[in-house]
Length: 213
Image (cartoon, rainbow, N blue to C red; front, side):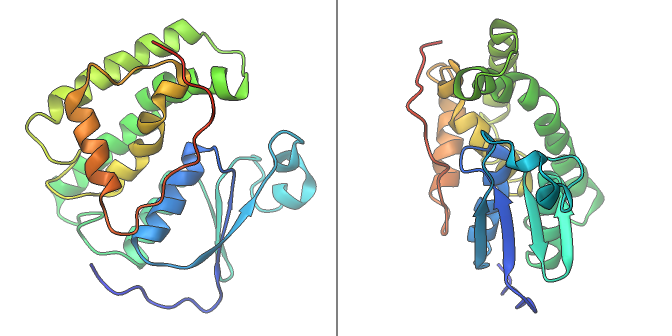
């Protein structure tokens, strides 16, 4: 891995400790060895919808990254930025085939992952009004596909970790909090363990919710 280039000012990550989108960025910062100040935004009190935060992200969504004078929103865009500026081509390949493989799984993270494991967890952890049964069914379809893919692959988009793995990790690791068991997916569980073994890995805080699927 390349040595991170020092920033002119400390990196600041505005996050929520139970947000998988926030954890993607926090994890990548740690894997890259980039020190960052973590600023927790209180979703319960609606801090993300107040003028000071909306000045950073008019959509009122987490996470937000500040790197010097640069302010970035959207967790996937932030992963691309960090990989391109501070990482190397292992995290985000520059060749057409490697880049396309990463993009394929980044699209899954923005689609099926959101519709499945993330939505199921939003119901149980945050109490949001979603169709829990439909979300759990979507989650199991995604997990079955990933488990099959991982029978022949070490990581999602390559034989080494990329930002595609980081985009999926938190919501899959914490899927049981949404009532989605990982018991039937041994290759997914092995993949999670490989990510957790990476130098610099930091976990996302668990909740007390643990429902049976």
